[in-house]
Amino acid sequence: MHGQTAQADTTNEWASVPRGPFHWQLQGTLDVDDAIRIVGADLFDVSADQVAAWRAAGQYPICYINVGAVENWRNDAKDFPEDVIGAPYWGWDGENWLDVRRFELFANVIRARLDLCRDKGFLAVEPDNIDAFEADQSSKPTGFDITRADQLRYVNWLITEAHTRGLAIGQKNVTDLVADLVNQMDFALLESSYRLGFMAEFDPYIGQGKPVFAVEYVDEGVEPKAFCRVALAHGFQGVIANLDLDQTPQNCP
Image 1 (tube, rainbow, N blue to C red):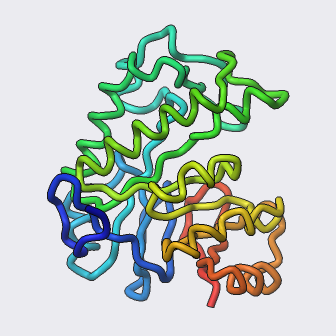
Image 2: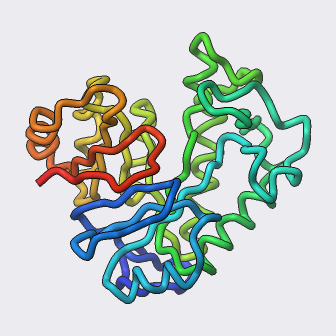
């Protein structure tokens, strides 16, 4: 059963993700304005008390979890077997791709993270780095030769695990998987979709009444007025942020 009340915690029931202003911040001190409806924050850096306060204020909290790469600063980083850790993830020191072809070898770590997300009171999960198969088609591969089928098998497992815990789950980027995931995922979160020209590929989410949060980065030279106009035309919630996601983002009107 999908799309229950905003306080749904029962297995196989999860709260629908609302539309509206989105505060997405993964570093630094969070200062969330009362007008915000959805908050995206790091699973490990936010306390259960903070999540409870957001929910008491009528805000919908989403936890960020890196499901496709291991970050060496996380407390559970050593729980990943060494032979599933691959090439460095470009641009982020201390982060390396995971071999999602063999996710069963680290499934217990991801399950524990999803348990923590639920137990802290988050209502949804944002799974990062579900695009390993695209990296292996580029000049910056993972080191594992991951296929689209490998990726989809892992993502489908993530969807089941999230929903079983009463958590909504979203598709983050990866246009090639929209047709496979739109019927199962509960929202979409896009990065640089305006700059890179892939906004239209996510219109099917809007067609199903599921929100799309489109984030553009100041560091990449976004022109806010032009971007916000296009985001509005698609029915997306436009957000302008810093690449490091370390300060309060600005929502399109």
